[in-house]
Length: 589
Image (cartoon, rainbow, N blue to C red; front, side, top):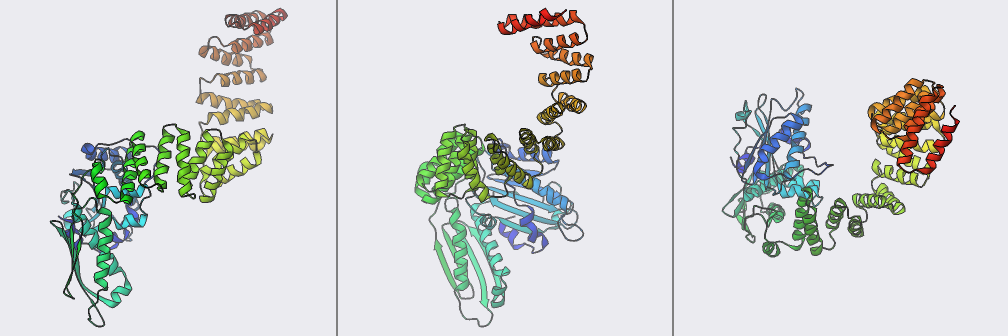
C-alpha cells in the first residue's frame, strides 16, 4: 500500500488528534550508546524492547526504511482516552527506536512506526519520518514545530488489523523520497485547509490531492470561493508556497525535477522546475565533489554538523572533530559546530581545546545555557574556581531550575570555606531536587566544620535515608557520635559501615577503639585482628592489640604485640618509630 492510499484513507478521529502527544520520541540521554549496524537493526531493536521493557515488537528493514509494528489489544479506555499503560509502552518503544536510528554506524533514511488496535477497534496509526530530520532535531538544528511538519501522521480504520499480532496486514517497503514528499504536501494542505475556520467559512473544498511519479509531483485542487465564484489566485499561491517550503529541505535527497499544480476551478496550471538531483541513499558517504556542487553553503554546514553528531554518538571523536571543523570553516558563525568541537575535546580529556571552542560558541550565542554550564564544569575540573563560578552564575540566570548548577557552585564555595554561600546554593539545589544524597552529605560536612553538630547529623542521616549504602555518610556520622562520646550510637553506625565495606581498615580500627571505650576488650581485639587478616604488617593493629592487653594486665601478650610492631618498623627502617617502641617496651612490667 502506498502512502497516497494511506492518506486518502485517513480517519479524523481521536486517534489522530492524540498522535502527537503520545508517540513523540524522547531524546534523553545520559551515556553514549553503542554504534549499531543497519544489517542487524531489526534484531537489535526487537532485543532492546524485549530485554529492557519486556515488550514484543515486530521489526523489518526494507532497503533504507525501518518498519516497527506494535500491536495492542486496545488503545483507548472506556472513556475514550488513551490507555495509560499503552501510552507508556509506546513511549518506551519510541525511546528504543530513537536510540537505534540515531546510533547506527550508517544511518538509514526512513522510519515507519505503526501501532495497531487489534482487538477493540481495528485501527492502524502510522508515524513516518526522515531519519536525517530526526538527527537535526536532536541537535537543535530544527525546531519542535518544524519536525512535526516534516513527519507524517496517519490514522486508518482497518478491519484487517483485527487479530494481527505479527503485522501481516502492514505492507512493508522502501519508502521513496518523492512519495514521502507528496504525502507531506497532502498532509500540509489538509491541515491548512480543513483546520482554519476562517478558510472554511469563505471557501468550499471540493477536492485536493498530490501524487508523485517519474520525477514529477502532481498537486491538484478544486477549491472555490463561497460568496461569488470569481477566480482567485490565493489558494494557488498558498499551495505553491507549501510545495516550495516542503521540497527545499530535501533538495539534495529527492529526485523531483518538476511540480505541476492544477487549479481545476480556474483551469490553470502552475509549473515549478527544480534542479534534478541523483537520489542518494547514504547520509555518511556522499562524495566531497557532490557536496560542493549540489548543496548550498548553509546546508553544507548543517550537513557536517549532522555528520559530526553521528560520529560523536558512535564515540568516534576524532572523525567528529574533522566534521565539526568543516562545518565551522564553511560557516564561522555556527555556534553548534564550535559547541560540538568543545564536547569532543572534553571527552578526549583535552580540556584547554574544549574551552577554546566553547568560548567561540559563546561569542556567537552568549545566552546558551548548555555551553555556559559545560564551560564552568571544565574550569571547575581544572581548579580554576573563580572562572567556573562566573560561568555557573550565567548558567543559573539562563536556567534557574537546574539543580546541578547550584550544586557545583555550592561545592566551589565550600572549597573557599564560604560556608553560608555554600549552604544557600545547596538549599537551592535541594528545593529543586530533594533526592540528592551527596548534597545532604556535603551539608553535613559544612555544619561539622561550623561545629553545628545537630544539623550535621541530620544531614548525614538524610543522605543515608536516600542512599542506605552511603558508606562515607555513615563514617562521618560516626565521627560526630565519637566526638560527643555517644559510643553506643557510634557502634551502630560503624557496624553498618563495615557491612557495606568489610575491607575498610579505618572502619575496623574505629570499631576496635569504640569497643575499647565501652570496655569490651575481647570485641576490640577481635576487630583489630580482622585488620591483620587484611594487612598482615599493619603496625597500628599490633599497637592497639598490645595496648588492650596492657589494660587487661596481660603484659606478656602486650609485650609480644609491641615487639611485632617494632619488627615492622625495623623492616621499614622507620628509626624514630623504633625509638618510641623501645620506650614503650621499657615501661612494661
